[in-house]
Length: 82
Image 1 (cartoon, rainbow, N blue to C red):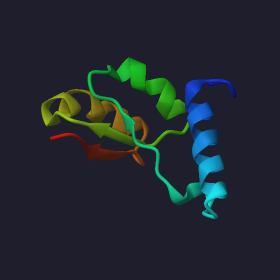
Image 2: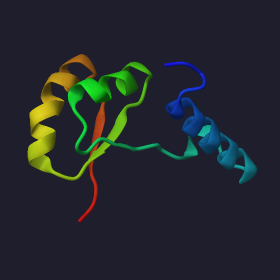
Image 3: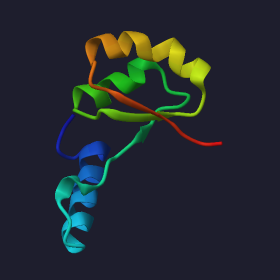
Image 4: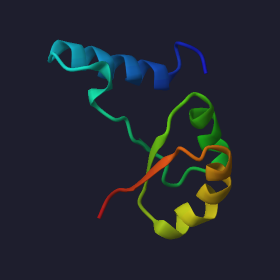
């Protein structure tokens, strides 16, 4: 991913907001919501260093995350939604 990609832009905005409030740049965790996305769509974010992801359906997560977690064992998964 390039410096102008959306992930880098969001990270920069989070870091700027943290600095404005006197917090460390890493005070907030960006959780990328990957529901309805395929493993192939998620892979570039993983390659760019994104490690926290949110899913809203356990069954969907079970279908795509085991293989991804083999390559990226430090991934954090969160259940989001109601």
